Amino acid sequence: MKKLWFLLLALPLVFAACDDDEGYSLGDYWVTTATVKTVGVSPYVLETDGGKRLFPSASNVPRFEVFNGQRVWVNFTILGDGEGDIDHLVKVNDLSEMLTKGIFQLTPETTDSIGHDPLTINDYWISGDYLTVLFSYGGGQKIHFITLAQDVDAPINEDGLPVLEVRHNRNNDPVNYRLNGSVSFLLEDLRVDDSDEVPFVLRAKSPDGYSDFEEVLTYSYGE
Image 1: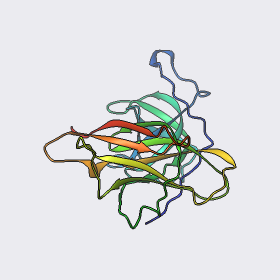
Image 2: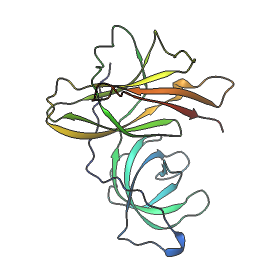
Image 3: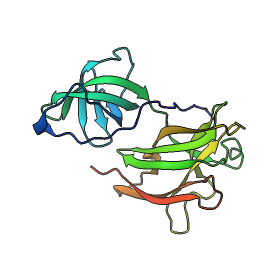
């Protein structure tokens, strides 16, 4: 299994509504998650998880290498309103690539390697083809590994819904601090023919040992 370690972010998570009638201030900024789009546009467009399309008219990180479909955290300042399918012209203050993974097919041989340590799910949402999860855990000395797994021997529950579990391997790291992380999981493997959405169960083992996380979410992929 290819192990990727996630980025711990120092940026504050800020969401704010923009009022076009009030104008924009260079002293204001927003921090959010987005997907990079490079097809048919130069240099790129940022599609935020809130549904806005941002064009980088200026950037503090001109050498940050982007690619189509890349998931990022973006800190930006609105410079003005866009035209056509662009909502805003922005100055990109900072970009950080978000850990992005697919759905791991869990087998009896791999179940121990991806771990079953607890973590706290702080927030989650689906945007486009991605499930984004914000989480926290105890650690401080070693790299931890986060995986979205589907058991090949029990891929669905008794109601016929796919079951996905956020798995955590703390790598025997001592619990010295409470740390935060984020990850986006590509859900395309859940698609089925003759449907434009798939409900599924999301699970995670909670630190308290008795109130494990479980929610039913819907992945919509129709036009």
